Image (cartoon, rainbow, N blue to C red; front, side):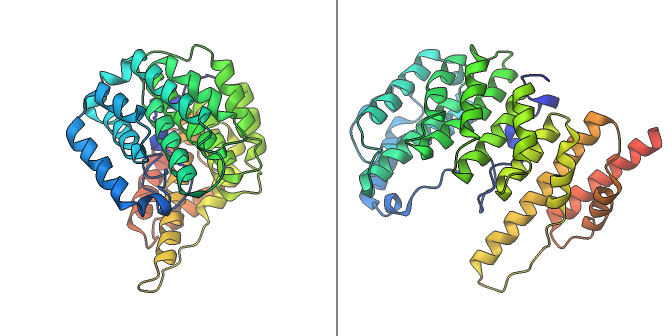
Length: 336
């Protein structure tokens, strides 16, 4: 198996760790704790900094080094700038990645992430966004701090952010024609995270293993596809599909069979669950497409039947995705 993502697909293109409401991988995954959001003063100061700094990396670094409770806003905006079109040059700046790594190390060493309360939540959120920013780089040096944090059992929130960031970093490096300096260390850190007792961390690890690829990653995904956590199974199935492994079929069928439920007016929880189901089904359809492309064979009969049925699904995105996949499968049959 290759150690790079297959088909030239970024991690954004398949199933993100399922935590509705979410519309993309990582950007919407990092949920700012309500205790932080409630600190209006710090939010105001955070946006003030953003307005003053623009996209000057040195200004970001200086602001992040201040011991101020609103720094998570700066880290968030920096990550978004790196992700945007204007961040192309910054992604290649190894020194800048090293500066962020140092800030992350200092924050962890300060002990502020331990314990409870508002201060600890703010510190953890800052670390999560710093990990996310490091993942947006396209230099192998950015992997070093992420590998270190991915295996930190004492701080699962930062570990999860680091694991997710490694998936993005892997794709960025591949797009730039580069690779990890120590891919074995990266894989080992994510494999360790995949054994966590915390479902959300296992789920993120399953996703990242599917991006990394390699024999050990696929072997672990073949175990995780039978995990007791729904999100873990789903991400493992997408990861296996990405790697062209037909062990994904059973769980992909499970995902496609999830029923739609129309919530009552004003039922926000029901709306979130309906969105979650649609997201899972659409990504399962993408997974089927990956496997069809990899094997050059149509899906099993039970899966094909579900895809046809989904062509009449009440959710437009599901209908559109199913119809497009049916056409691809039909073309495959005609070519055969």
